[in-house]
Image 1 (cartoon, rainbow, N blue to C red):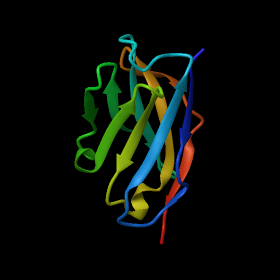
Image 2 (image 1 turned 90 degrees about the vertical axis):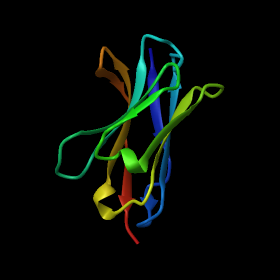
Image 3 (image 1 turned 120 degrees about the vertical axis):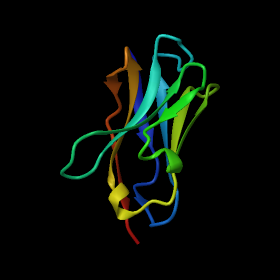
Image 4 (image 1 turned 90 degrees about the horizontal axis):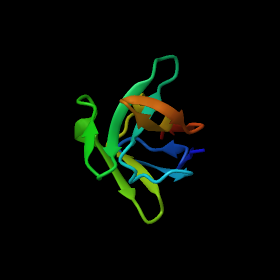
Length: 118
C-alpha cells in the first residue's frame, strides 16, 4: 500500500521560496504506471493542481504557476519535491502530494499547512 508524507516548513516569509518534500513508501516513483503531483487548497477555496512529475522525470506545471514552480525528485530516496518561488500571502494553503493514475489523484498525503507571513 502506497503512503505519501509531506514535510517542510510551516511558515515562509513573503518573497522567499517555499520548499516541500514528499516521501513515498510502498511504491517506486519510477514505476511507469504512475505520476506524482502537488496540489494545494487555500483557505476557503477549492483544490488547485500545481504540477506533476512523471516516472521518467519529465514535468508539467499549471500555466498559472509555471513561472514560479519547480518539481524535482530524488530516486535514491524515493521522494519528490516542490519549490515555489516569490511567495505571497495568497500562497498560504494546505499542500498535498498525490499519486496520479490515469490522470486522477488516487492516493494522497495527509497535507501540510504552509502559511506565508512576515
